[in-house]
Image (cartoon, rainbow, N blue to C red):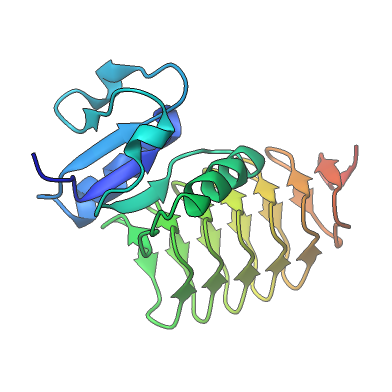
Length: 208
């Protein structure tokens, strides 16, 4: 049996969402999922094969690999493990419903889900994920291992460091910087810069 076109490392809800982007962009692609933990196989029935065993059993194939872990710290752990085993990461995958300006640039293993809108000259680093219905304004820069949750709005000229989580429906106003390792809580409105390693919540967002 030949290797699948894509292998998703992770088999939870985020993997199911990521699979929708593949189904939209590559409707004839074959996909498999792999995980160290519990796999809800019913999520993938008729959509993707579930590889037996732990993640290590999925390595060493000719497939394109995508990290399918929602949270940046856990995603980094899986990516580092897979990279050390020789995994070659896929390029960016964008859902057909996403609107992405042609000047946007992507690293490896980047996923843009449906109904998102990315303006001109946006840059997104390796292993980052943009969820459903996200807006990212012009000239914004997102680092590596960034997770932007559904409905978030990032203004223009925003700089986001590595390993950052932007919560669902959060807003980051234009021109601000979000330091590496930070968390912006769901629904927060960020009106001033966020220092590295901080968690901010509320309207306006304040450090927790």
